[in-house]
Amino acid sequence: MNKFQCLLVVLLIFNSCENTIEFRIPAFQANVNGVQFWEASSFSVTTDTNGTIITGGNLSGTISMYMPLLEVGTNNLGSSEIANAAYQDSTYYSTTNDGIASIAYLSDGEITIEEFNSEENTISGTFNFDAYNNTGEYTINISQGVFYRLPISVDSGN
Image 1 (cartoon, rainbow, N blue to C red):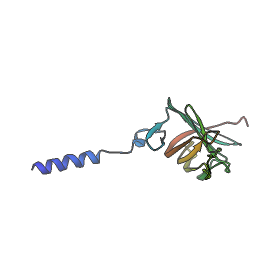
Image 2 (image 1 turned 135 degrees about the vertical axis):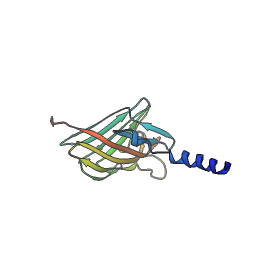
Image 3 (image 1 turned 30 degrees about the vertical axis):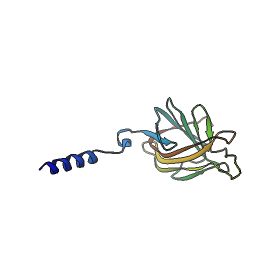
Image 4 (image 1 turned 90 degrees about the vertical axis):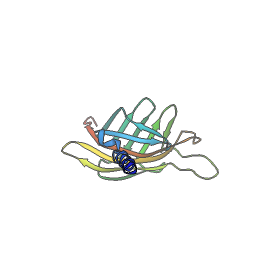
């Protein structure tokens, strides 16, 4: 009976593990350099005729992403791409910069809009990118990024 109770406790522990995004609607979060969990305490999505900008920040840093079109699909990131992403803490990292070394280190990544809900005026999707500072000496990796049901503001000024 004792083994059965231990097994039951273990199963209950693993069964209670859930993805934290289910409890945060809307949500904007990612991993920084594979170890630091980052979650926006404030965010905005602004779109106009020039494109769409998604921005989120907290006390440790800010992520901003630009896409030329607001539509379901994938936007590639890199120094030769139109779409771009940036992370700023004490240093500004951008996918418009490439690294310096004897082997070319290029910024890369993608922003994928998985859902554009026109009734609720929200977007959801994923993102990841590698970016460099303006000298190309330092890099940052943003992985497992998620934005979920972020409300969109339409800027009619442009």
